[in-house]
Length: 450
Image 1 (cartoon, rainbow, N blue to C red):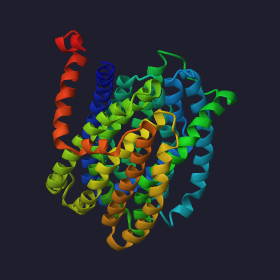
Image 2 (image 1 turned 180 degrees about the horizontal axis):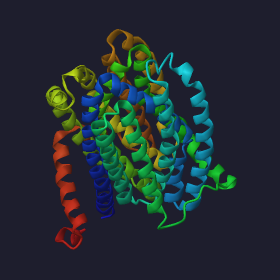
Image 3 (image 1 turned 45 degrees about the vertical axis):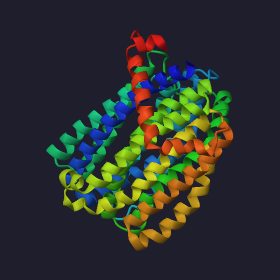
Image 4 (image 1 turned 180 degrees about the vertical axis):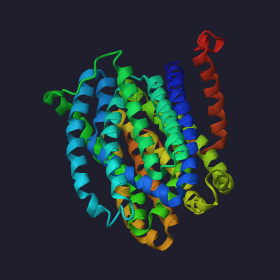
């Protein structure tokens, strides 16, 4: 009975996030179709790199506080107002300091990673640093309170605003990469304003942090932050190495390949968002996580097969033949996309149980492979080499997390075989369909029987 109710709650929450993610994916594909048509591979590469380093800096500067907020607020150890105030206050100080340093270093970066990008465009991209950092912190409070409907609403608003601004600045005014960047920044500002407005109904957001309670957040957050950084580098160092060894054109081609392939992660990301605060507050058995994982793997695998079969005509139809080279890289990414479903779901389970170092272990083992293989394969095979490296790295990360999860939850390895069994996928779909119907219609016969 408890497990059934748990799955219903997780299903409803995951559906909110998944629905917003699918909507966001549709909007992102629409926006990138516009960018592909109006910017071309080189212009798309300029836009990607202009926001890439500031966003990477934002992830570095979170210091694990979003995860700590979800855990501490979700488990009742800290108030939401205090957690957000500490996060935003420290984030503002760090964003100002690092943003200033980045602007000073821009001329030297133009001879390497940012080669060929206009200095003004790269400088404007610095504004994404404080916006992204603040959004990470504010969104973590919505997740901690399991207000996933509001969390999803913010994503939808941001996507629609970015699309609207892109139609005006990129399509109507033909401002090129500059219009794309300004659209991105304006949409991020609107989204952050909406989050603050939603939170204001519960408390008045502040930026005055208290050192005593901030230490508590940092002591938890930093434990998992190293893992987050390693995980991020495993996911994203390929773009920087493509930029270093190749040209902005190849960056544009590769960014489109990752957009298409990693679009399949919206299922896993939705499950992560719903599962993390739930595990943190209830410490459910590993069986619940395995059920979630099975559904995620099933949907992702079917999606990867369809994308492999239909990828080439989709690229020609939506993005133009100029991006056909993206298909080869996307195909090499697909096995890794499936592999990392295990890493994503099992990592949030471990962190939710207090094993903040769980994600660190998997990423630490995989990172040397990521760096070494990229150095060898990108100069030889170009963007296909970067994609193959990513797939290998994702597989290693997930293998380590399977071992850690089995140890932490006393789950046998053979239990993971069910996550790959198509027959079990069908049974789980029927079970979730029945639970979903009673979750949305609690007065129905199915709901009463539970």
